[in-house]
Every structure is written in structure tokens, then in C-alpha cells.
Length: 248
Figure: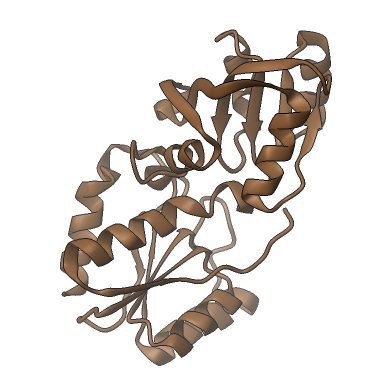
């Protein structure tokens, strides 16, 4: 397929135009016109780019791309190395940030719910970015933390009473800790996201609602993989996911 066809299809699929984001969604680095092999990754780090281009990718799709609002506009240092790697090989980079978090089926939050066995009952927060629902069965906080750790292969941090019963939960992949207090108003027993901030600890303790920080990278592995598999099935092109382990 053609790069512009790929861009337009994903743009419609993820409803890119409806999001106010911190970076450009879509083609960030333009490469060759024809796309036969798509690589996906969470972040467009040099290691992911090198692995993807060695595999023979024509285009690389990531959740965390480049050109973030407020960053230095100069193309120097690590930014230069990454962009030069793509330009020298005529490989495209496409990035989808908030649209990939929020998509009802392929999004990070939807995929996280599927992996962890949460039933989605609704959404909340700015642009409906976060989700809430129920667990497939009631369990203690410690059981839930163990399940999350086993499934995501990352030991979570958590605040709360280990033997407290958890049945209703809210979640937001990545850096969603700012949604914690909105989640409290939903009457949940626990909130799960990627990161935790200092003030979240006090709020969790005072409100009696558990806070689980399961890793920014670990909670955002699945949306971009689901998108890549969808594209492979839709258009008959090759897809491979390249992961770079990240403890954060």
C-alpha cells in the first residue's frame, strides 16, 4: 500500500482530528512511498529504529514519537541521530499519542482492560481518556497487584491495604496519575496507571482508595501492537512489534 493511504486510513480509524494533543499525530518523518512491512514500537528510540530497519520495515508506527510541545526545536544530539537513521534509510515514522490511548478497541486503555480482565463500564477525564469498570471477579488488592505484575511482567508499586477487597476499578495507561482524584468520585476501590506522583500517595491513604503504578511503558505496550495487527489483517502487509525493555 501507499504511505498516504496508510496515513489516511489510520487517521480515520483513530479519529485523529478530534484530539487536542501535545505532538503531531500521523507521519512525522516521510520515507518511501510504498509500504509492505510495518514495524511497531512503544517509543521511537534509536534501539527500536535500528531493530525495525534491520528487519526491513518500510514504516515504523509508535505511540511516543517526536516534536513534543515545548521541547527544543533544534535537531541535535539524540534527536539528530534518530532522525538521521530514518532519513538515510528512507523509512517513515508515524506516531499516534492520545488517539491511540483512547480508541475503544485498539487503544491502550481498551487493550489493558482486555489483558487484565476488566469490564469497561464508561470513560472519564479530558477527552474521555481514562476508563472505569469492574474486575472479572472480586479479589484482594494484593491478588490484583500480583495479577497485574504477572500479566505485564513488571512489579507494580502500590499504595493501599493488601487485604482490602477490590471489585470496581478505574485506569489510565501511561502517565495518567492526574486522573486519580476524578476516579475517586466514581466510587472505585482502586486506580491503576503507569506512574505515581508524590501527592498521589497522600490522597490514596486519606481516601482509602488503592493506587497501583504498573509502569508507563508496561501499560502502553498493547495498543500499538493491536494497531499493527489490525493493519496487517486489513491490508495483507507484514507486521512485527519491537519492544525495548523500560523499567519506568
